[in-house]
Length: 614
Image 1 (cartoon, rainbow, N blue to C red):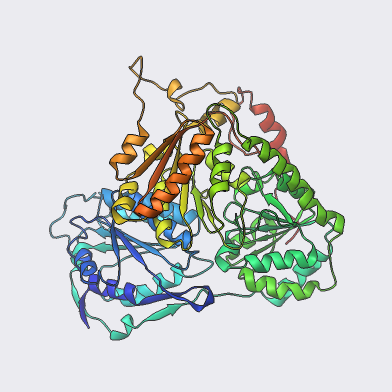
Image 2 (image 1 turned 45 degrees about the vertical axis):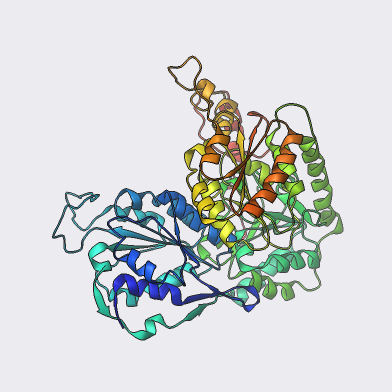
């Protein structure tokens, strides 16, 4: 089949299918996000136009934003579908590097197709080409290498035959899932080659479910049987495996209290009698208190990031760690007894090894008891009051007015602590995306656009601060233009409030975070009119001053977004210094002359260095 390199690549994208739970067949690549330039408009752009009836192409307005939308799509699709983003060479390509970092940190599949300079080098240096004085083979696209799970530069058309199966492998592998970058020199995009027809035969990709070896299962069962106070941690891998029901069945069978990580949030119904709450710095004091008492921790599908482990101070010094993970890289961390395998099948295989064993009922009952104390604390934080509302009150109102299948998102600043620690989930299906692997400001709006494409059965609401809004808001117009409904709640607290909290909480002087501590030549500096700005981007806009106004505005925004099929933005002033606190420690480097150094010196020696599980 004689095709250009670009035509062949697009034909291959169209042929790839994905099997979702229940055997439902979906396109593996349901959307391409594109900004065209001289490096991709004629080759790849022409090929995409020719197949626009079967491969939807959505116009982005910043390369970073559209690539983040592709990441949000993959998360909402539970890694069963993959977003594609293409740009020209140069600044457009480099703008997508941040999104690649987000996908890499969060183990989410993403396909990036940046244009590249001429392989022939005949017209060098071309517009937007950065020349490396000592190596002419290096282009700006080499910046993707550290943040790509798989990188290739296609310098001959026939290279697609060897590389495309590897692209599919990485994007659909439970252990290796992450960003793939195919750099596409513009002259090669236009070259014609006689490709084998078999390359374009439809393929259905099924996520592999590897099993751990039997000896590891026996050892893990022996470790659990010795436990007096075991604890279960459910991470994002449980979500992507579809193992939530299996994990809860496992916990109930043996009476093990359950906690969640940030990526695992909403897997467990909030009122489940074994649920102790979310773990870590942005989690709940209830879960952290059980973690401090647990003698064996069974972690499933988590990379044990520092916010989950409170910089490795949340566990008892003598804890033993057993880790189920599809990626052996994660499973062996901190000397854990490693079970390398899919969460669902590994729990299925582990259960028979524990027959006849059950946890002391007093320990089992601790989960509901401590979570009840945390719930009472959150109730107080959510209680209505007069004046400017807090983040906790805003989250409570959104929680109250959302349905069980609606989807809620955030990424950076203070909102992750409010959503992770305070949200009460109906359970049954994952309905939250807190991008706290990379904590990328701006993901809140761009990622919501992608999530709105992929999430089925409910409305997407994203919550963000004024700082994130100002950093990356152009994809609001992309969503409005495309016709994808979502609600964005913009909380204006006059600056980068959560970093000011960190700065001042450690004894440093207020500086360059709030507008009040930032340099300006104005006696009365300007303020941003977020409502007017969002309206200019084609959004429906609602404003509120106090909590009752916000509840009404958010309810109307939900209806309007659904009816009008475009984003609705709710703007509300919020308190800059009121937060939901779990009490857990997070290690940051504190200079010796600041007051926070005393706590640092006290808690640093308590860090867990290694467990005895492995």
